[in-house]
Image (cartoon, rainbow, N blue to C red; front, side):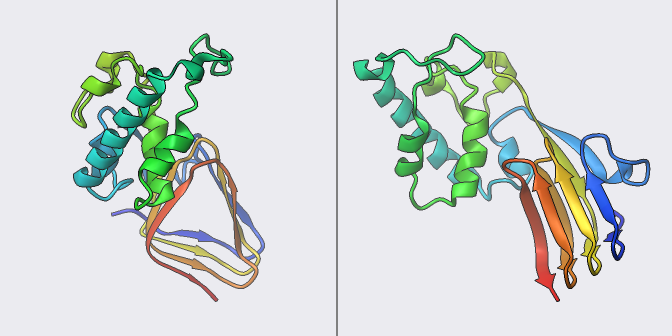
Length: 192
């Protein structure tokens, strides 16, 4: 069972990939080896949703690769020689009934797959076998999180997931997030 986290009045607690000794038991680096792991770790609710997202990614990629204007002008992904296919907007439009946070979470993993072989990928395909980088999801688990009056919980990159049963933020307490794409999953989130 995970322990509780209490941010005391007027203090700060930092969650990052080098947690203090008191927090190391609550920290885990989860490895995303297949798209199904997104369901296994609770980031996406079902395999049906994964399959809908994967089908949309395949359709958008096939359409994009078949359009010659995709490559004119030639724009590369920063830091690489790989062309930027500019698929994300079309991908979002292809799945309008799926929560944008789920869509973005899926895309962060799927975009690492070589577009030329995406059509052959299933949700069970081992991503490392495709030459994709393995996604690591730094996660904190707590039973309950309480941020006392004027306390601050700071969550730094690359933390991607905070799970707890109950999250209570008291008067003037706050959460400061320095991490893009953070998902907070709690049974109850309250402020008072």
